[in-house]
Amino acid sequence: MSNLAARNGLNGQTLRRQYKEKISGYRSWDQLDHAEEYILFPENLGADMSLDETCLSNGDVYTILTNKTAHGRKGALAAMVRGVATDAVSAVLKKIPLRKRLEVKTVTTDLSSAMMLTVRNVFPAASLVNDRFHVQQLISEAVDQLRIRHRWEVLDAENKSIKEHREKRKTAKTKEEREQIGQWEPQRMENGETLPQIMARSRHIILKHKTKWNGQQKSRAKILFSKFPDLEKAYGLFLKLVDIFNR
Image (spheres, helix red, strand yellow):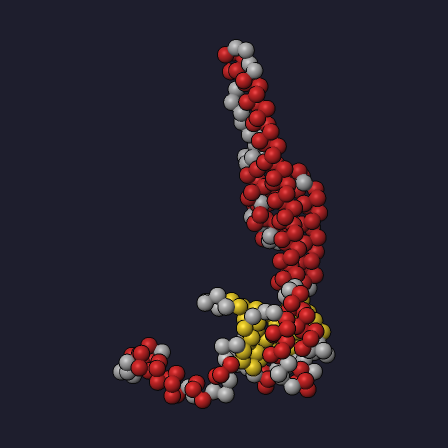
């Protein structure tokens, strides 16, 4: 708006105010009295819809209903409702005539039970679809939780080794014995890293497809999976799911 005003020799603040108060028709908008709570555009309903939540800059959470065929362009927004509570959101969406709601055939949403219940309440003829992103994210998080569990096991084992080494040096009777025992050194794998380092640095490995690994990540994964076969199995299941989605 400021650039437009500058190109036409106008005051930017004045143009913004005039646009809001006069040009846009904002003050005479038929949804102005409830716009902070919800807005509805029933004409934008279609066969394939998407229900999601978003957090605005002021921290308020809104439920967004969009038409997937519009691909985010004009005509995409069908409803925007403050909050995510099923009862409140459903009550607003049911203001749309049932005839229009029955035209909806699919609604894509995340794995939120509240979102899925809203779909069942509002769109009785629609099939519920969980989007790929959230399903894939759920599986990848489960694989990463397994990595984290094994990482703590590795750290516990290392701490135990350090403690035993200290006790061994403490019980040494002579200086020569202590020198022979030496300082504690972590075991290094064939790639030069310690196992705790590999565990910490493997997060980005198991969250991406193996075809995208670089040489360093491949060698790290080889060590990781040789030490923890269950993690390799879990990662393999994750890959199968990704490959199904990619077909």
